[in-house]
Length: 308
Ligand code: NAD
Image (cartoon, rainbow, N blue to C red; front, side, top):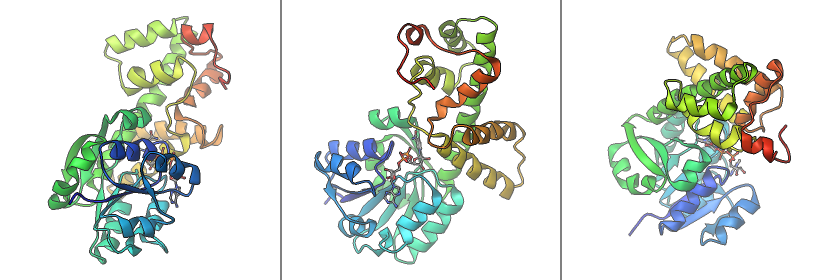
């Protein structure tokens, strides 16, 4: 019999990912503290539960997609947590929570004969909708063999290693680069605009040349040039990821010289605008300092209602 699946945390990423599991024909029981999120999926065939423990009572494999490491610990191990459910055998954390949380949660779950497996993802909300995420799986090989097909519903799956937390290490490295690309490309594009370059042309040239990166290829054309600022990833979450990355670097005595400058920019964005802003709004700080706007022609001709 195929594994019954559970899914907890139906936010920007979790909702489209749980939806893909449903569309692939899996039985999925869902839970989120926001009733509107569970209702949306119930209308599409998901069963709903009233707590993480109830999800785990109905599911062999439970996925988590939650904002912070503390919430993952709480939802997995706390009162009414997943570990209290009688049926669950595997808990897969899709969130970005760092290797230490992954290892600690896996060790606690093991006491109840539950395998803690990490599978953080990259590729944003667009990737979650399309099923084109990079999935960084880590945990026992036999667990991987059992859950691989379900993970493939989310995108391209990479088996990173057997130790709990190795997928998380991989994800932190990826996001250090993603945060760097967005901050550095914003700074460079603002300089270009100040020098009189056309923003559309500038991004096209960068993408045909050696400067191209995840921000120039993706966030600039989709979220920044059109001034929609709707990548679906917040300033708060990228700060959380960088904090986790720096904790790892410190624990391993590895200096992050470039990363330090990048991180200061993101801390500035947190203090000036707040954690709920889409992370593509980081360019607005560079724009304010230089007194220019990096708007594409389409946005200049048809400005979106709220560009600030
Ligand atoms: P989000 O804030 O949009 O969604 C989190 C969801 O968790 C919300 O629906 C919230 O109601 C729910 N939640 C909070 N506390 C809960 C609890 N106690 N029990 C049940 N549900 C609870 O966050 P997101 O952008 O979907 O990100 C989720 C995770 O995925 C984060 O760790 C993030 O770093 C990671 N991630 C996000 C992106 C992205 O582009 N948004 C990309 C890759 C990875």
